[in-house]
Length: 309
Image (cartoon, rainbow, N blue to C red; front, side):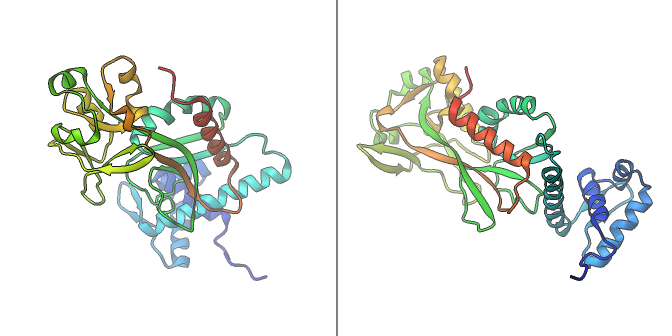
């Protein structure tokens, strides 16, 4: 079998990944025990071989190109797999190790996942976590991420999705608002209320409210002069300060419902939920630290329920 990489070997790829992760040839050189000039020459040889520019250089910093980000994501995954393979072969893979880069939606991150991560680190202290809180659907490969949590999973042959939880929806308002405007008895009564709207950034459309009546699921477009986009936490904050009624996830308003600052209405028409899934690239050999994180998260969320108030 002929050699594919020639003089651009694994050492060069490791240097490229170091430079990408630290956004600095100098820092990569320090970690590798080389000079910045040696790192720069190595990257230049890689670019010449690939016929692609991996970094945009300036006098003060470097920045990866789109091609560089895509190449980095594949290289990082390949290096992690090689490390795991060697550890398994030699019996040295006693515990998961490495850094995971994860994208989590803001509401689920603050209320369900972030509180669990210190416990994960206690159990797997050799695994580092880089958490990106974002409400947009990130491109895992292009942005060099190992895992994302998504409410809406688009069909993609290159990704695997595992159900994490079904997040129940509730309609809430403050006692003061309900005293002033009355409680809706049916979803149709919402036409006489201020219903705080969440706008989908992708379409600019208001998200319909979801209900269930005698086993029949239906959606309803509700009226309201207050709208939020990007961050779902905004509608619960507006509701908490008397802005009107809001339909949001129960896990977001768990504490406010428990202490009476918010009151749930239309319980008879509840029971609807939206699924959240863990999404990660399909690979024949999943890195051990990624497998450990997925198993931990699913076990903790499915067995323990919401964090204690």
